[in-house]
Length: 481
Image (cartoon, rainbow, N blue to C red; front, side, top):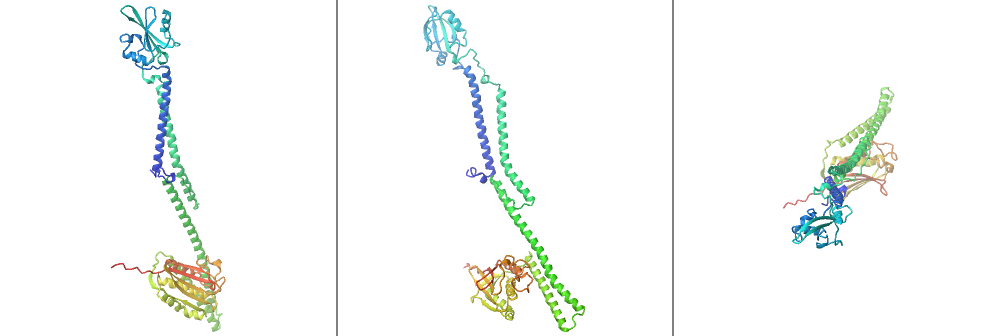
């Protein structure tokens, strides 16, 4: 019952239609009552002209002759307000059966003859008959008030008293019911058609490419659910379309950047190779310098291709993630040890902070090694000698944080929002040496693959702080006894 009487937007369609039908029945019942009262008043109006107090009341005086005072006919007469006068031979009233309502005590022959005509202006209906007594002849005069009797008394069925024909009332009733059905059908159809029209218009807008279209429905529960589903679908389509557009733009930008990054070293390689072919490198020193340029540029092309392959491999659905339990402290020490020679060569001051107690985490060793190596390599590539490099492991209850920070030149904040996009370099404020522009993008994807995050921030003394967060490994307690 609570669902039946709830708000329309929370009410099931079946309940709503049930309420509509019940309302229709109530209206129909009300119209039947009104129609009945109308007919009743119409017939009653005729009864006011042609009615009798008792349909079995006898209006002939002779009907009362045999049992004048105690007969059943006399009781009906008295109940209807009539009475009987007993007249002598001189037409004088000598006795009365019932309550006499006029003051006439004697009649003339002319008066009786005129009254027996029962004209419309008479106050009483008259009927006269003889009553033979033992001594003399007497008369019985019947009087009935005209408001309860008329000389045109009809004993036919009730329909005879209608002001109109029976077919008139039949057609009128049928017409009213048909009109009510049409109104009810229009009302129900309108309630269903309105939300459907809104949904149709919304779908039309979506077909035309307006994916920001949303609809608002105040209707039954089923329509409200359709509206919510439509809006959810529109959100998904709009988001997917936006991501697809961004991906296409990113893909186009990536292809342009890749073409540019490949074209520059290849052009240099071709130029130096052509110079060697044409014999412009006469002396051994120049030839060595040309060959060094060719080697460096070819290495740059190789590295760029390797990074592209790695980036595509990460996005591939066939990529196999090997998440295992590892001790993170020793793992970071090994990575720093691998890079220590380059750190010394660059004259960097290393600060390694790793907890002495074991810190276990769940990660893919190859991916995390690639991320840490990349961040350390960037710090070494883009900062001048004498830069302080800090590598720190910070455990917490649910995750482990790895911070790789430096006191170098920093990265402009306007680049932070796009720094992890492919082919974006931070060399606008650093050295113009520049890498492939894919390293940080690969690092971000690798970290996210492991369920972690990679974030760039700024410290008081360290303008560049890369923060890696990965899930901490929690051993399952053995509850078996």
